[in-house]
Image (cartoon, rainbow, N blue to C red):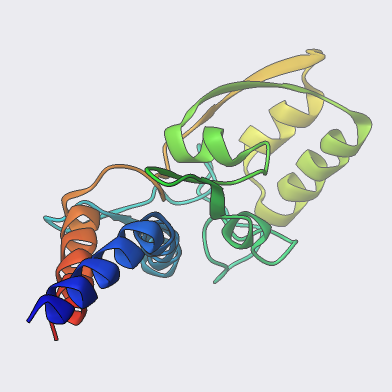
Amino acid sequence: MPNNYDSIARKLQQLNDRLPILIGNEVVNFALDNFEKQGFDTGSGVRKWDERGGRSNIDPRPGGKILVGKQGGRLRRSIRRTRTTKSSVTVGSDEPYAGIHNEGGRITVTVTPRSRRFFWAMYYQTGEVYWKWMALTKKKMMTIKMPERRFLGNSKALERRIIKLIERELQKCFT
């Protein structure tokens, strides 16, 4: 009989060593699922991300997914376990713009000749006066409000996924 207890104790110790990695992978998968859902799963439903376009609601890439730019999902691909210890795991992104997209906020941008060309192109494409005024502005710097498009953070849905993972792994130790 002692061999059985020793076997279970060994399996539990191995699980304890692997658990931060397993939980980190589950958090990464949760974030990737949020990209697929185009919103944040709160546990009581998916809170959809605001559409692109701000004032104009014009999307230069119709049918394109939110937070998937010309790089084809660089932000999405950058989400990974960034630090793992025996007792904790950190999941995040090394992209500098990840935080502003996840939490929202205000950013200051420089109005360049290239951005003015973009504004003119949008004005000619849509005919909306908003783009014309953006192209004609004398400002060198502008503040843009980025909406929160949370893809990573605390969630009841994530908690449930982690609890199921732990229960499944514990069950393996006792079988």
